[in-house]
View 1 (cartoon, rainbow over the protein chains, first blue to last red):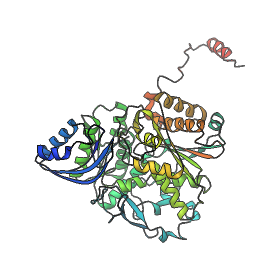
View 2: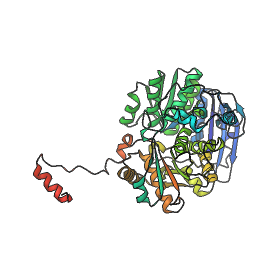
View 3: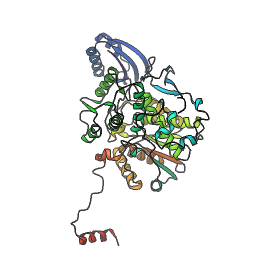
View 4: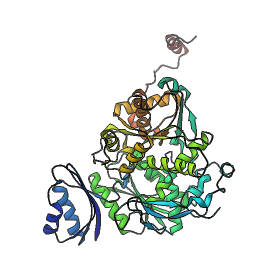
Amino acid sequence: MKLRVYLTFDEATVRDPIIWKLAKEFNVITNIRTAEVKDHMGLVGLEIEGDVDVVEASVKWLQSQGVHVEPIEQNIMEG
Amino acid sequence: MSESIVRALKCRECGQEYAIEPTHVCEFCFGPLEVAYDYEKLEGKFTRELIESRPQTMWRYKELLPIDGEPTVGAQNGFTPLVRAKNLEKVLGVKELYIKNDSVCYPTLSFKDRVVSVALSKAVEFGFKTVACASTGNLAGSVAANAAAAGLESYVFIPHDLEQGKVLGAGVFGTNIIGIKGKYDDVNRLCSEVAGKYGWAFVNVNVRPFYAEGSKSLGYEVMEQLGWKAPKHVVVPMASGSLCTKVDKSIKEFIKLGLVEDNGTAIYGAQATGCSPITKSVKDGTDMIHPVHADTIAKSLAIGNPADGYYANRVIKESGGWAEDISDDEVVAAMKLLAETEGIFAETAGGVTLGCAQKLIESGKLPRDESIVLCITGNGLKTIEAVADRITKPRIINASLKEFDVLAEADGVK
């Protein structure tokens, strides 16, 4: 599967090479499509491609690193 | 019906254009797609007289909504009252105040009926048989009801612990309701995966560009109901921020088409403090939206990382407006104020809008001597739990005239 997500990095995570670590840790193809990085915050549009289980595990790992992971549609769940 | 003026779907970031299809994200840069029109095709054809000759529904502006031909879903929706709020004017100390009352929008009592009828009409055009959404309230009810009326199969995804009343508000229409366990982010992501995998029209995913355009009808109606005038100031509740941008777009379109004069309309955004990422960005003078975990009674506005936040922020700044936020206590107080002064029972989001407007008036951001429109987007009967403890309790008496006489005398009734 190919998952398209936005990653939001906060001040604590914005300097870490987390996407590089992700590709080392999991058998997924990562493809950065858009990015905006500032001192205190970063936003990255990323494609993660691989087997369903591996992609889902990689998302959980990103969250465990303190990264906010959202689908590119962001708020699908509305009021 | 004149020729459709819809040109393409256009990326709001890089400007890349796409054919009219059920798609919503730019393949190049992930930017959101928006419907682009060739307005010049309407020159001299789309007149006040033509609009006024049509039935009083949101479809009297159909040339500016992205469907081909006539609507197949929600043909009766929209055209809600614009109320001159004389009593509230006195309380707030302002000269000219209006309530755009979408708490009585047909058929499910929220402005979502506008966006859903466009999304579902477009879904039918595209040949979809099943429509879907993920919602904690108004959107679920609207998709379920409008799909039922149109004979479409529907799937509604909700958090598994949603209040019974809200489950009923969708379930009564015979939709397939799926309750999902998990945190908001996980539930949200699952819905994205479902939308990507199944060949359905997911109203705020693959048909979102069309869905969002439905909000413009609220703006068109306000201008027509003001006597073909753009208001000076509009206060809009913000969840994703989409309504803010579409009200602004509606005004710009009417100006472009010569239907109203440019009145320098300023757009103001309203949020509850417990979920106010867009307001915070405006107040902080930045255009980056920091995601938050929502914690407010205004559930219909509880979107922690709003998709249109950046664009709403831009509209507010460029139009000369501002953004405000209020506490949950202030939300309830404003709901009561609106009900007691104007007889309008709005849901919590309505309390947010009025409460923020009060604050903006007190701080001088909203001038007291110019026209102000407050957008009320949903009905209070859907969120009675918010005010249940704050309303006046009945005074209980026996079926005895004497007892009532005592009570009436205490009230000073002659």
